[in-house]
Length: 342
Image (tube, rainbow, N blue to C red):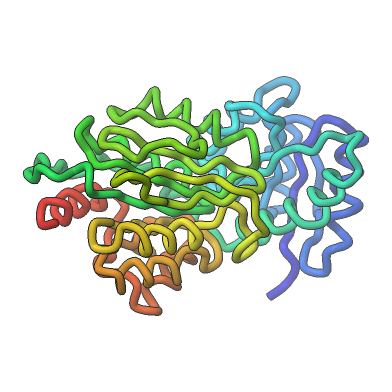
């Protein structure tokens, strides 16, 4: 396989030069063109046919989001958005971007080095193998209501990475107000999870919030693990499920880690839990999902045809951790069916 051919779209010449110089240091990445606005980007896409485009959200002449909305239906391609701490990044993901990376504060050398040496190159590599052009999600087929009366004893755990922001949204939007408590790990930088939770809270019937240590897992509420340097775990206190968010080293390259959450759910909730693993690069969550299954939990994995990146669910399926492999639109219905049997 040859080098990943990249188009860098960035209006700041200084930052553009920084990106080009450092991306080209990677032996598997080559910047083939640059652009300062969407019109230059359009011409560069036609001329150079890049494998991946990096795109600043704030651009002259046309916003990066509007450019995506016009580009993707006509020319679907993997796009990594570079964004400051701004909830507009989720509009970009909804418009078809594969993933995003947080723009560093330029006067913080350690943050800049991590961004240019690790974060952005890794996102580009993931985007290069992502499925694009099929991200728009059809309406689910509907589901039956919950029939049992022990919702407070049940917990649903969800893990995702690349492509997960939209996948998680499509699933939990189908959950009713009386749905069991949900705990979620979505790989995301610090600061963005709060905005993501707020966005989901406006879209969903359930209450959605960024988790804090001591939050009770209760019916009708979704807790999103905070991005940054803390893992989220499930604990049981006085008969009630709660979450603990504590600092820790990366697991499988991530903090928070899906594996850490799933393993705690296996240990604490056992057969009173249901695990769902969605689109994402790598294998984070696979072993934890297997532990959940071995503890008696029911498990669901997203199928390849509807994943942006069929990594995490594939590893989970291959090791026998997945009871049911489902298209994304069918996961809510399957979830309800399984909960009604618990």
